[in-house]
Image 1 (spheres, rainbow, N blue to C red):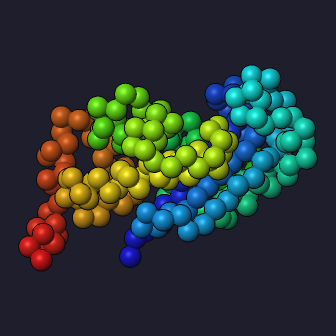
Image 2 (tube, rainbow, N blue to C red; image 1 turned 90 degrees about the horizontal axis):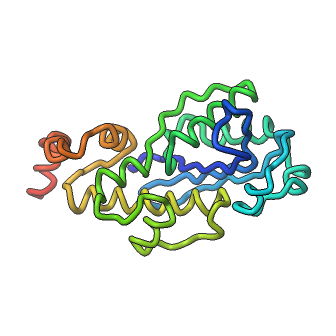
Amino acid sequence: MPSPIAVIDFETTGISPSMGDRATEVAIVITEGGRVVDRFQSLMNAGVRIPSFITQLTGITNDMVAHAPAAETVMRDAARFVGPVPMVAHNASFDRRYWQAELALAGEPAPHAFACTVLLSRRLYPQAPSHKLGSLVDFFRLPRTGQAHRAMADAEMAAELLTRIQHDLRAQHGVVRPDHGFLMGLQRCARNQLPRFFSAQRGPEALSSRAA
């Protein structure tokens, strides 16, 4: 049975929580076997002002977050929604920082491992013109699920990209089980080591599967 993976996206007031930036919206989709089986989304009020250029980018206004639940409440709900499920994000270093920072402010642990569809796409698709989410969605003709730079649309598009990556790992590289643990190993692997990595991961299970 496929293991669940949580795909997350944040919208924020800036590039780094270490600079005082905060999250304004979070969305998470749970995928199993290439299907979205559950969703979580909320604006959040962190008590900070959204710069005008961020509003122009995302469409999220100060009035919208003023009427949203407190960030701490949203993050506790998000943590309960995810539970122990491992996580994926596009440009995961960004979303991981906000996941950890916002959960810390809410008094919650954040032990989750993050796989990154940017790193994975760079390993697997060097021919892509860009590894930005929208560019990869267009490159593979994946469905656009809503307005870019809103959390749920971006989380769902990242989930579509993850499904494509897992499909290609099975179909093109003979990977029997491209689960989260495999993805974590793959994103750490240098491109010139990929053939050896795929060969080692196939093992007897893949050979018996092909023989059947």
